[in-house]
Image (cartoon, rainbow, N blue to C red):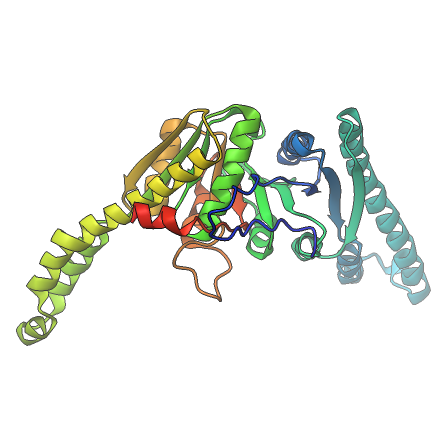
Length: 364
């Protein structure tokens, strides 16, 4: 078994499993504002369970070599002799390789000093190649249970909320991933918001949120969002295009009434059930520090975004995939939208937890 957290607890009436912990944290560093906050938050997390931190930086010496060769045609005539070109290539390659290596070491030195101050074990990881690819490969090599990275790096421009490296790595990460989005705020400030939809990853994320809320003594607010409005839009559009004969076959009015009277209210009950299960899980683990639930209606990512603006959490915990995910999906639509649009940190959960059968039966 590798070091990735195995939190897929089975249904049973046995004593509760302990809440999840992180023991091996991979931290992406580049000395940007978001990276520096990531370092502080990673140190906070590691201190809870005496976890080790591996600092990783990716540099692209080969990319610079390719670019240098592409620019050779624009060099002055005296530098375009083959012997001179070879000399220039060797000098450039040596300077770039050594220079980027020195920069990487400097980033890692800074991270190591912070970890030493906190009495934490620090390991160094220098990677060469395409940034997102190398970082994703390191993330998924089986040695880590949490990746921490900033939403933006040194290439950030005003108005951006998430960079391409972050997006690509999050898509490919097979472990819990913490994305830091507020350089001026600690994730420990609270409150913590957890989004649940009945999926095992949502409940796995809930367990992690309970563990963090207990350690930091901050409130945990659990939300579930369902959309009762889509059917009204769909039926209005369908009514515009259905012929009278097709409407009879489809039994349009009966279908519309069915959704209004049964399906929409049924959805509300299902998602309220998810919240009741979350309450039961919290009680089972003795969580008493400001736990509350709320049912939201609307397009899930939009309803959640509005709620986040209202409560201003320091951390949102959400499953990477939701209840309707299939085998080919790399990230759920709601999670992807929230990754782009929210301002607070996101803990994107890959851990899975299946509530006990009797808990589900009681709530549904």
